[in-house]
Length: 234
Ligand code: FPP
Image (cartoon, rainbow, N blue to C red; front, side):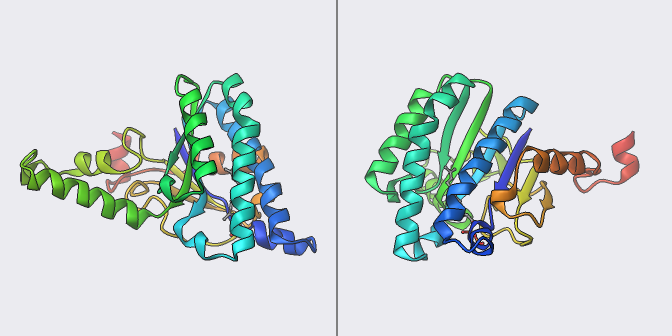
């Protein structure tokens, strides 16, 4: 199973506590840890977290740099836990646009956990679903131009394989916290058949219990992929 999460509401949660937004992000890291641990325990094979969108670069400079520092510290601090729990780290997005120190730490952690088999933790960083599709289209156009492939070879599989998520199965479940009901440019192609689960909880309030609720809700839905209930039953 693959679960994708839009971690939303760190800022609002912090405000509720009378604290600044960065306080919220810091607490958000505990929810990341809790969710990753619960997913690994349950046998979830892929967990993708929307940690930083390309739009997030337009936030106040102080918040952006605090998020980058937090990311750097978290990757650094959690590497041994990832290794111990046999969790492979991966990243999707424009990694080259991250501060050099963050990109370097990230690449090293990805390399060091490459052999891990239990679960893959995918961080979407400087990620935008539309940019991902544009990038894929350009790659495919180049292959056509150089005659490496012909027009009739363009199909769903080729497009999937040209995205950042090549080799990763599509998510079955998308969770978004904080009551917002939007996709916000996240995994536009990959979420085609996903079930969406929305909770009012802010991301720092999200924990194992909340994840179990989301999964139980998902398990009670009937996924028809455009077919009728009768076709699915037979
Ligand atoms: C959304 O809340 C949260 C983010 C944009 C950042 C998420 C980052 C973390 C939880 C920390 C680092 C993550 C990892 C994977 C190490 P918001 O700021 O949009 O909240 P708001 O909507 O209430 O303003």
